[in-house]
Amino acid sequence: SSSKTTVIYLDHNHLMPVSFPATETVIKNLEPVEVPFEGDQNITAHKTQLIVPRNHSIDIQVPGFKWARDISLDKIGKHFIELIPRSPFVQAKARADWRLKNALHILGEVNSVNG
Image (cartoon, rainbow, N blue to C red; front, side, top):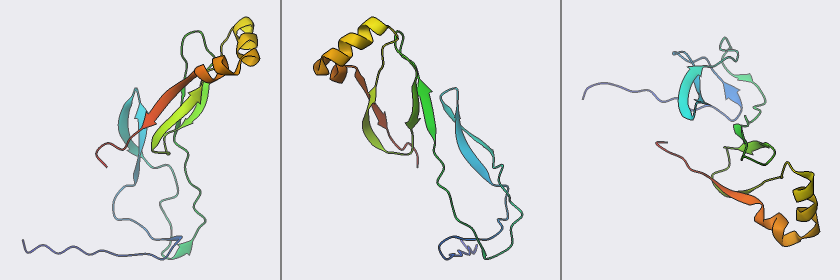
């Protein structure tokens, strides 16, 4: 084809305006959804800014256990997630036996799908 594409590379931590509305992907009802980016899109070229990594995470609850909070979706791979029983009696039993405490984990896996 005769169309032309221009690619511009920036130095580390340099920014420049984009020619399209910026979006980010969030998870809603277990589905990825593109939503408008709420950050400052009116920047000047070559403005330096420290970039803070975003932490994409979820909370889950297994019946009979407390909420497992802040499970990172940024770390690809398999990770064990500790389950803490809601019952003080079961908590005491788990504290008393390291094998039971180790058994109260679930395996979570984060994969990249289509990108």
